[in-house]
Image (tube, rainbow, N blue to C red; front, side):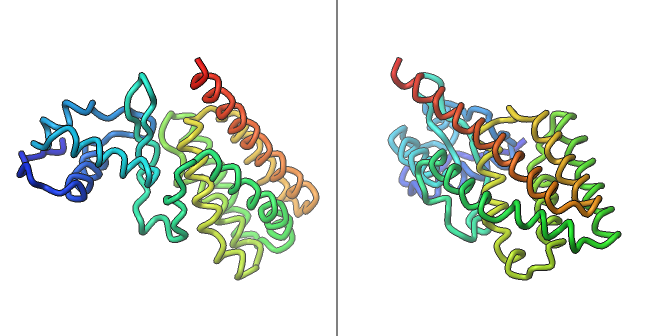
Length: 238
């Protein structure tokens, strides 16, 4: 259990922010879970509620927290600056960012999958099959599958034999994390099904099949994101 001592009332909001991040990571408070309310956090850190409000606003701007009117404040990401080399966390509208990331992924990943089907070695194909299996097992167990999902897509990129594609992986990794944080496991069956289709096509050396399966995978994801955005808009209008 993460322990916090009372802080000096004059503590800067930036220092409270660092401690709140540590609290989220070490308690731990998982992605999708609500943090304590403003009053409880003020008591916990020994600072005024205005300092807590400022801290929460800062972390919301960085894409770590999301304030949901009438519900509370939720953890939507645990990315640090080191895990966000492109600086995408600065974009406030995470849903718009996710859509733009999908546009980039649709430009890149279908062709990456097609190249992987042409160039993957026997050993790499076995690694991809194993990653596909592990991602499914973790997903079905109810645990966070994000890291294994990233490894799956990274493996496909490596199999493409294109060194520039490998350098572009931070874009795809950020896209995966952003999507998972916003959708909260609402596409488990579709993700498992399309991951399997991508894998089988690459194993078979079927470039057309790999390309189509990746398009299907990304399309399912984008449609779910659009649905969630529509639901949010309806809630805000009520």
